[in-house]
Image 1 (cartoon, helix red, strand yellow):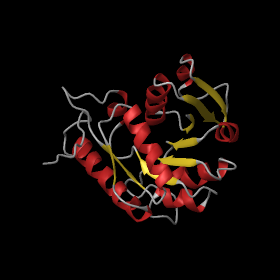
Image 2 (cartoon, rainbow, N blue to C red):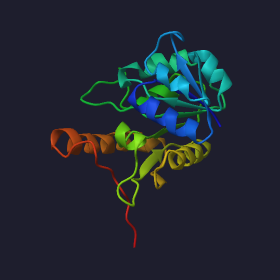
Image 3 (cartoon, helix red, strand yellow):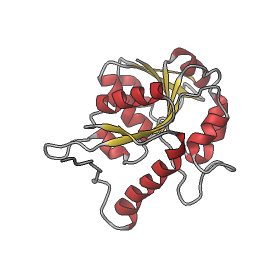
Image 4 (tube, one colour):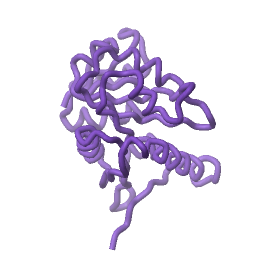
Length: 205
């Protein structure tokens, strides 16, 4: 799969590495191709860099991993996204998000042509993307969105990143629920002193 990654910090960098190692073609979309955070990611032969619009044009799917406040600006910078899957990893935390929107995925939908927008990889820390192994287990992640195409892409990429499962939790109406769930992880990890080395797993019987 050809994947454009917009946002080459902790989350984008971790997933770029995992997916490139799985054989996906990664195109980092950046403003300045000569100087950007995560330039070391180019050491992987399956990873290249381009301007944001060029990366999107070359890709099948797009991962957005920028600060939530930039959701509208970034969405408008993508160029033609018609027919492309957009995976939103962002969260509004402590009110810091795109003005006029209750969640970042709605902001993306309102400012791109793509209807295949899903929210995924937002309910855990980047450390769990770098290393999802806990003894003999791996944590689960979750995905929300109306787009069945988008959900299937996210589920496959979650497994390629090493997560055990990626459970669909509903449609676009669950975007806010996903962000609240993300804050639950943040609360435990940061505010309640559990630390970042925690993850969620769905148990069944």
